Length: 362
Image 1 (spheres, rainbow, N blue to C red):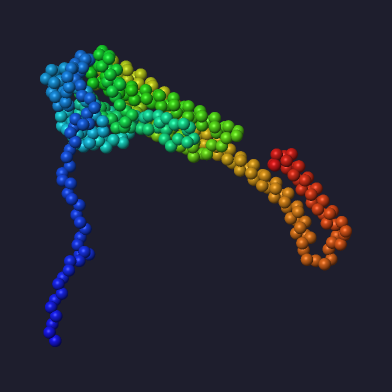
Image 2 (cartoon, rainbow, N blue to C red; image 1 turned 90 degrees about the horizontal axis):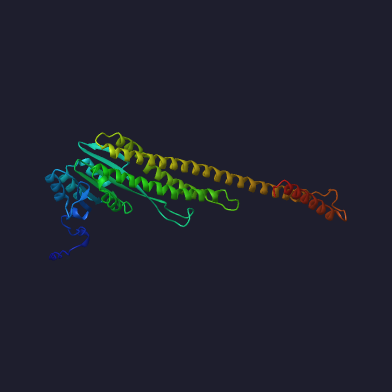
């Protein structure tokens, strides 16, 4: 029998691999200028006219041999911060901290550059503390201070420093103190925001306290825990700053005039920390009070239930006795036996009800 010609092979889809995604190509780095909010040169407390880049500004200062540069950045990426670090000689650990953020407040020194991390907070307006999902919003500001420059990096939309720069430029005498004056102004601005937030939180705590102890209003414990969680977040942002401020007050490289201002900032920070600790204690007491109120309500409910069970037990007992299938039972053949037994049951039930009602069980 003649052999058949081989069948032509058809392309099968299952033998093909997944279609490769198109190569997007190398990522184009975003220019450093996109992350710079403002860059200025200050000499003798006055801002030099003109616009400067981060490289031309430091070159101008070092060519003059006086003044300093203030560069403000907002959420730079690795490439942008690396360009700043290369120009100003910053340590790579500072670059890593400023890019990735989420740092605790701290003060570190890398050679001749001081690195201060500040946590910023903002009060989120809401209609009622019992319905709010978020009360405190947090961010970060990093300040790098050298002999002839200061670099501020902020994360978060609420932590702008334009107002701080304007106030400093309106006070040349303070700005003439150098980069440390900018460090103080930023720290003072952040701590002042702490004070404003704690005042708003105080109103929420007072409102929560009033609702918890209101006789005809029930506050779920979850709402108290929400406010307590926000106070805890505020405490984590504020309390660790005490150690860096104490070190700055004793820092010999900071001018004496600036250290005096920093002591005032430290006093304000202590006031804020004490307020937050007080709010935390009050909220803990409110949680205990709310739990005690729930327990008391449960006891009242159990007393009511027990009272009605005791009243219902009387007819249940009588019905159980006379529901037994015995032939020789007394009172079964009385003419008025049924009416007498119903009357006795009603009298006993009414007597129990009056007794429980008199003792505030019902």
